[in-house]
Image 1 (spheres, one colour):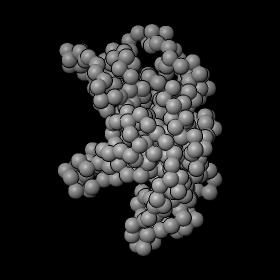
Image 2 (spheres, helix red, strand yellow):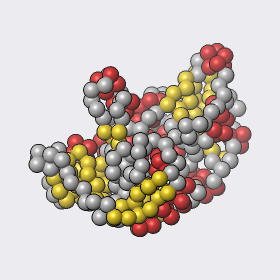
Image 3 (cartoon, rainbow, N blue to C red):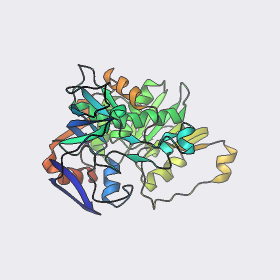
Length: 329
């Protein structure tokens, strides 16, 4: 079968790989669409994936075309979205309910072959059936939405909060949509990309700007979310948190990224700095929110490109062009 392959640091190709074989509790999914993500860029840079080559793609959905011998809850023909998370369920973090911090953390498309291919294998337990009205190609958005849901779980934000989001790419826009639906009094978005800011405005925000200085909240924001992973954005955002406010590191930064904090201010103003790592007990809820229309796929998905153009699509994504880019095998 054809698949995208990150062969080595900086090199992505499309080639032939063996057809997948399911284990007893696995299914084979014929991929309908697979989203590109910042994690894929990190893998290309030599981060995250323990070994290369690897077939990337952890945001995907498709149709079940094969089932393992012990699978009874799914059948050939079922349309599913796939939670890529793979946990050991044995380490202290798994036993404590923090599976996303598993000491043996793994994921489809990161540590094992993923959905940037014609077919992918997934545990049956990781598959969520799609309702009839949800288009299979659109359901690649469920995985990133589940990360945003996890982010809001971490925030435990109060009604009436003033929210500032850095970055209006896919993840920033998803955090925007959830902020609107969790009772924010205002939501502002900062980005250097005018086209992306225009999309944020289209979805409905209180204010947008290339800098937080352009926004009218000198006292700061109750919740500041970085959805960029960019050091300059993170540094600026830390200084915009209001007293008793929370800063969420949601964007994935490079390993080498460093910023400076002000310990006295954190103490004196009771500021919380926290992070959100991937998916935790949020995938099924994201699937339900998606089915209920929390996102408009036609707004979020800017490009649908053939799998054969995966390297070009990855380059386009790295350049910050468009919003969510999905490859279609």
